[in-house]
Image (cartoon, rainbow, N blue to C red):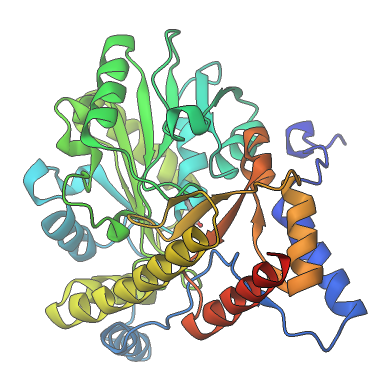
Length: 391
Ligand code: PLP
């Protein structure tokens, strides 16, 4: 017996596991401290009532012979697909054959690599959601890191060399910015010219509020020929615990692409959860849309407050307008772990060290607006008091 060596990721200590370990160690030694997390990437608003009601009804269905559901469709409920296409992709003319319902964009953005040749050259801009690199490594794929830095405002520019697959994340975790039409156009043109495919992670789409930012990359001419777009109900409808995502593989990429991928899905996945898909359908009622917008507005108000507070404290801040994350520079010479330790131990505040998202991130930290405003305010007060004393 030999273990799959691709699954053995050398322990870099620059990961979320280390964040958790440090927090637990500190809590053990200091059990009475009131620790506030500004790092949390999970949502804090509960699931809205119309969705809960729809899921209740789905549970009731399961009790009766007439309405009971066993295995569902491999690629998702037709009614949910229809709702997504009508509400989110209306102008693009996709058919139900081109959309897949799944159980999380984390899984989807890695699994999709199996659609492409094992020797595909994969480009991953870094600083970036770390799962792209780890997922590719576990599937024994070759990756190249494209460093994105403050110089290009943390936006990846197409390189001169040809790559087969490119990960792009917009609105981005962790930088919290969204790609403009022009930047996306440059990438789509690159992909058309090089016959590449863009794997476009758009899970934070519902946070876009700048009118000129495209909500879907398919707004760019020719994108249907070169892009697979991923979205999720996790952040927009608080589904982080109940799991439902979706993605589009346009037929325009290749006449057979969906036939091939459908075979793979059938052999590896037995379809998304019935109850959860019923909940997801309820996302699109008028009542739900209003309530969900309130949740998004809540997080956006948090982001505004955080951005304003860190600005006033003299930090350089990116993001927080079209995404629930802020990317902030550490100006005092500390590394991102030193800054993490300092905030945890001195002010009992948790942030996420930038190094977790790539080497270039070591002079930065990530703050999230997905938490509770009362706690966020206490954390900011602690920071203000600390800096007043320092001055
Ligand atoms: N992609 C990005 C950029 C994320 O930040 C996250 C979660 O934080 C995911 C994907 C995972 O989403 P899901 O909950 O649908 O698996």
